[in-house]
Image (cartoon, rainbow, N blue to C red; front, side, top):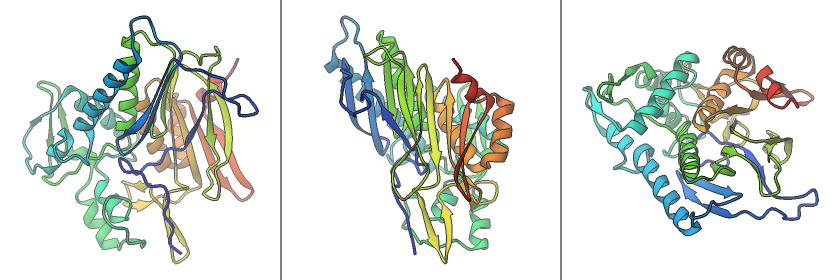
Amino acid sequence: MHVKQDQRGFGFFLVLVFLLVGCDDQGAKKAVFAFEMTGQTMGTSFSIKASVLPDGVKADQLNIDVKELLELVNDQMSTYRPQSELSLINNSDSVEWQPVSEALYGVLAEARRISDLTEGAFDITVGPLVNLWGFGPDPLSFQAPSNESILLAMQRIGYRHLKLRTEPLSIKKNLPDLYLDLSAIAKGYGVDQVGLLLEKKGINDYLVEIGGELRLRGRKPDGNAWRIAIEKPTSEQRMIQKIVSITDISVATSGDYRNFFEAEGVRFSHTIDPRTGRSINHNLASVTVLSETAMEADAWATAFMVLGAEQGLRLAEQQRIPVLFITKTEKGFSEISTSAFSDYFKE
């Protein structure tokens, strides 16, 4: 049997977080937001809610400003737009220094930082392996690639082959065909940019979500903290694992339970370990990360899915990152959280 579900266009790392923004226990709508906006961006959906709009901030103009900002992020970071800044870099076979925008440089620098901290478990050059396993834009084969093809693809990846320079802002590819894919970090960056736009306009009580990546500030219209539900990591039906009340933080969740295929009785996750070239094979079903920025939470969620619960927990404790790991056991699912995660929810 071959199974593959819920793949999203801009990124192959599926984020599974439901929003509980304005319902009472019976599900009746009670929160009235001063501003609400939904749409499509980065190959997925987005949602923005603001509890209060300051005097002089008009909803129509805010809608326009957000759309323009999201278009700009796509023009910088998208691999699906042939003329985006990132696509032009990917399509170039130059191994010389190339100038980049401050925005793109910032995302690449953050990706490099997390790659270093995870010793390559997070790697934005992993695209050729993702395509090889059938989780990229190429047609799916629903079969594990050969060892030879994996080794060949691994010769084309490696975050250390991308060099960064601050003066002037520029990058250099040591491999002519090095391919950069920001799908595991750019949605988070987009969330942060929209949040900063709202804050510049004096909006301090808001929720911004792109593809499940969240940035929460202030309160809902009823004065309570935002509530999110972390989904139980099962492909059979959508169920809630844990509900948390939370604010003034960003959240990202990554899991391997809705995007996979099975071949000859073996289940292959969409999450590829750049260090081995193979689909991950451990008992970590999903991971939820809290961080000051959605960009950081986005990247760490992917990194921890690659590392697995044991290595991921050890690194998260070292870095004092609030993380909830949900693992598969013979009796169901088990939660493991870092001390920073537990501390965040203490009264």
